[in-house]
Image (tube, rainbow, N blue to C red; front, side, top):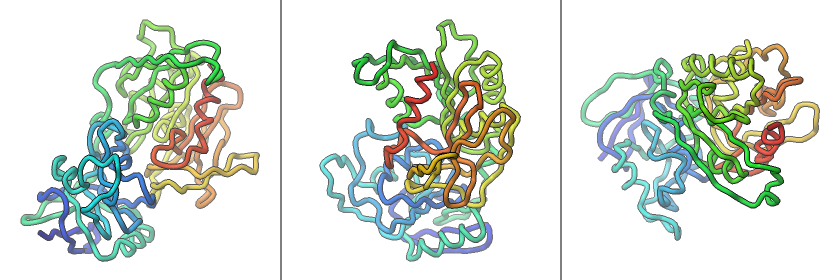
Length: 353
C-alpha cells in the first residue's frame, strides 16, 4: 500500500505505508535523534505534528512495554522515515513499530529521501502537511488549537515515593505541584525519586486553592503556542506574587517568561532531537541536551537574566531570576531519551525549597 505526503507549498512525495491506512494532517517537523523513537512518539509535545526522522533507520528495536513510554499513547499525527525495519531485535521489544502505529491509528510512510525533506524544512521552516491515501483531506494548523488542553490531566493526581534521604541529600520530604501542560513521565519519576510528594494538576487548575502546603511548583513541557495557555500564565504570575519557587521545563520556560512580562516567538523550524548544545551563561560549560519545541523566549522579563544559550543559533535556552527562586530551562533535564548531563537542574531547584 502506498500513500502520499503533501506539503502546503505543493511538494508531493509518494511513500510506502507501514502504519494506519487513513489520512492525517498536521505540522511537518523533523527530529535529529538517533534512538528513542518510542519515547519521542509518546512525548505529548508532539501533539498535532507529523514527524520526519533524520536518522535513516526506524523500528530496529521494536516497541517496549507501556511502562517505558513517556505517556499513555502516541501523540504524533504521522511519521515519515527513510527505512522501516519490520524485524526488530531487542530483549524488551513487545511488538513491531508497524503494529503499534496501526493499533493507535497513526499513518506512516517510508520515503526515499528524508534528507531532502529536512533541508526543505530548514530552508522554508516548519510547514503544514498531510498524509493521504485513497481520498484527499484538508490541511490543519495545530497551532490554532489549545493542544495543552488535549494532553493535560483532567483532575489532580498524587504520587508518593519514599527513598533514602542520604541518597539524594534531601533533609526532608517536599511537596511539589506539577502543572501538567503535557508532561513526560520521566519528569514525574525524576521528582519522586528525589523524595518529593508530587501533586500533578491540570493546566488550568488554580494551584493556590490546594489544601496542602506547597514547597514548590514545576510547570511542565507541552505542545503548541505558549500564548494559548493563558490560564497557566495567570497562575504562574500569582505564584510569583506569593514567592513560591518555580521551575519551568520547555513550554514551562516560555510560560514563566510570559507570566513575568517577557515575550515568545515561533522558531523557523524548532529544536527537536538529543544533540542540542546549550551553554550556561557566565561559564565555559556547554551541555548536550534533549529538546522538542517550536517556540522560544524573545524578550527576557525584568528581574530575570539568561541562564542558558543555544550554541548553534544563540536562542534563549533558559532564564533565572536575579534574586527570587524562579528558574526555567528550554531543554529537558529529565533527558529521556537522551543524555543525562542536566539532571542537576532538579537538584538545584529542590535546594531552593
